[in-house]
Length: 85
Image: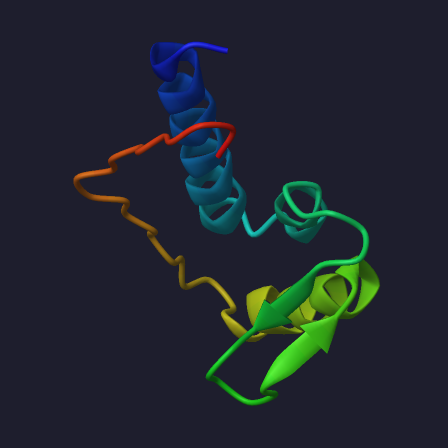
């Protein structure tokens, strides 16, 4: 994969993330994570083990927002590659 396609992939994930949060779509947001993800959070619970736990936390968060919306912004995204990384 070329650097340009890797950058496009990263930016695609960022767009999907921002769209999912704006729409309060927990399922779409969790789909960006692997099933065995460990997600660290500083809000209430220190970490969530696995996608199901993360999805439940997201559903609770989105539900608590009522009509409020959250806008996520990624600024100055840069992709650095070295070898196979």
